[in-house]
Amino acid sequence: MLRSGACLHLSLHLWRLLLFALVRSVSEQKLDATGQSRAWRVRKQEQLEHLGHATPAELALKAADLLHNLQSTLRDLEAIGLEVFHRFNAEPQEQVWYASYVVQAIRIGLGDHNSLADELRQVFGQYCRGLGTQALAAKDNGYYESTQEALRRAVQAAVITSKQK
Image 1 (cartoon, rainbow, N blue to C red):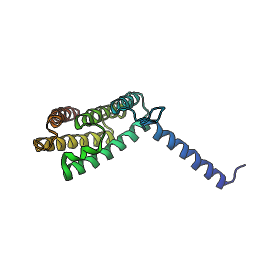
Image 2: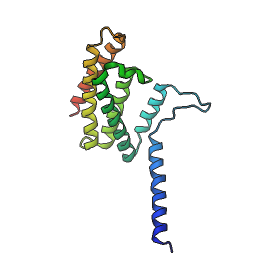
Image 3: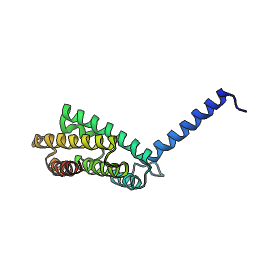
Image 4: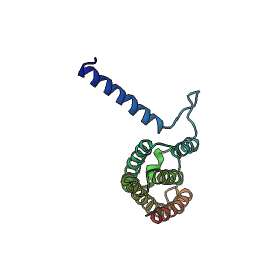
């Protein structure tokens, strides 16, 4: 018979293993077998494919991660403008493309009445509006063409998310 201390240790170990497996299941493989960075779009498409058959726990973790990322980027977007996108490996329109599909997959997977999915949809709408506002103000800052595309996609995504209410 196991002592209570041993049971607790075993339970914590199992919890860590389960948590590690959950995080790993929603993490992208950034490097290939040779250690080279994999293309951003390929990694994101793999993530979207996985979300199509993800468990509710995986969807919730992905939603929480994207929610945090969108809120952080939105704060930085308000503080420093479109310069925030210099730290990413993809243009703003690509970021909107990916986030919009993740939001949609989470809404479908967790349901229309899930509070986490609803909060994510709302923050994504704020993100799109913030990006659109910054795009309009960026005529002379070197982002002109990509922000035009980002603005078009941001407006389109905001329309899509507002229709899902």
